[in-house]
Image 1: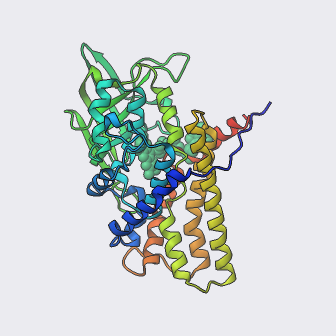
Image 2 (image 1 turned 60 degrees about the horizontal axis):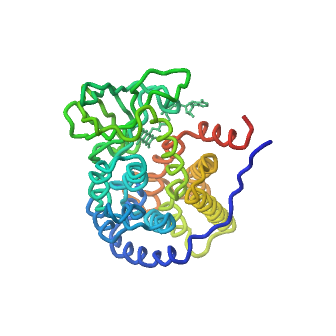
Image 3 (image 1 turned 60 degrees about the vertical axis):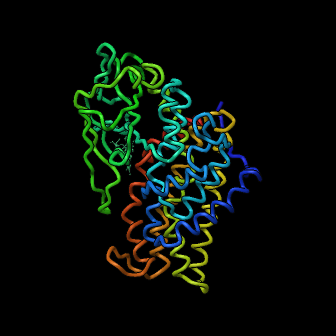
Amino acid sequence: MMSVHSFSFVRPPAEAESLRTQVRAFLAEALADRSPLRRADSWMGADPAFSRELARRGWVGMTLPRAYGGHEAGPWARYVVIEELLAAGAPVSAHWIADRQSGPLILRYGTEAQRQAHLPGICRGERYFCIGMSEPNSGSDLASIRSRAVRDGEHWVLNGQKVWTTNAHHSHFMIGLLRTGEKTENRHGGMSQFIIDLKAPGVTVRPITDLSGGRHFNEVYFDNVRLGADALIGAEGQGWEQVTAELAFERSGPERFLSSMALLHTLVDAIGPRPDAAQAAAVGRLVARLAALRQMSLSVTADLAAGQDPAWAASCVKDLGAVFEQDIPEIAQAVLDASPSVDGGSDHAQVLAALMQMAPSFSLRGGTREILRGIIARGLGLR
Ligand SMILES: Cc1cc2nc3c(=O)[nH]c(=O)nc-3n(C[C@H](O)[C@H](O)[C@H](O)COP(=O)(O)OP(=O)(O)OC[C@H]3O[C@@H](n4cnc5c(N)ncnc54)[C@H](O)[C@@H]3O)c2cc1C
């Protein structure tokens, strides 16, 4: 029989909602001078001073235990903060991955020494992480990675290459997935996760310039990188299970449908208070889709908080969210006669150009559309 998961109607509890006013007030002041174009960078914009200031207010690593500098806030408080940061186009990229996934991963799988070493710096907004999964020829088929870590007495020696590593150029550490054993009949075996110090001798980070001229991701090379035994995180050979657990958190947050918010804002401003019928209908439909996606994302957050594994529902949020984010530049062009401009022009023209260049990547990063739809089909019992 087909097992069908339904999305439920949930709202963040009042206690978490009460944070919203504080966060908004802080952002209104802190981002007063931030242009719409810079707001379009959203979670790709890095600003370590901003990250530290957020942390000072208790809004980085907020779900982590107090013993490590966190605030033991529940997932809803974090959701409200993240939602406000992204809706405002705050520059959260520096601490983003550490806050979203490396911190929780270290808490869950790390030794006490690893927790003590990394979590306080994450909670201060000072220690940044990147994700080393993809390799040349190993993206969707992650189990085919070839980078390897080999035991040498008390050390691990790493060789290989990662690619598309967002933020490696301003991160201190990578949590990397490496091969530590041979493939057996279980093709997901023989992989382990490592906390890799990006300053270690033998690590080379080379930037890749993207379509918009931005430098967000990198190639990372390992050439006989020697790490201590304590670089292994979690159990040897359990890397696949650990990575899979990470991905449900990576695929359902508000970042999966808010990436084009700066453009929705400039579109509404550019249309002005007297939209024609087509403009009113288009903006109305976009806002209705936004509300539905938000509701789905809240529902997955509730499942994660209840300890369930909503992998396919998280994939629905990411897939439908990316379609929504990619539709906004298309719809903006269809309902308003404004040309995109990379070189001056109105706020709307500049944000439109930026989003048109960024949008193709929304359905690649974090798992491609085809891969997500495969997970959804499996969840629905269709394959
Ligand atoms: C902006 C951005 C940031 C990124 N940041 C990171 C990062 O920080 N860390 C990291 O590790 N990676 C990162 N990635 C890499 C990303 O995870 C991969 O690009 C993605 O998983 C796809 O892998 P690939 O590029 O090798 O494409 P491929 O896997 O080669 O896919 C190419 C095409 O074939 C399709 N395809 C592949 N297999 C199947 C299949 N079985 N069935 C149907 N269709 C299939 C895909 O859907 C896609 O359309 C980033 C990517 C982008 C765009």
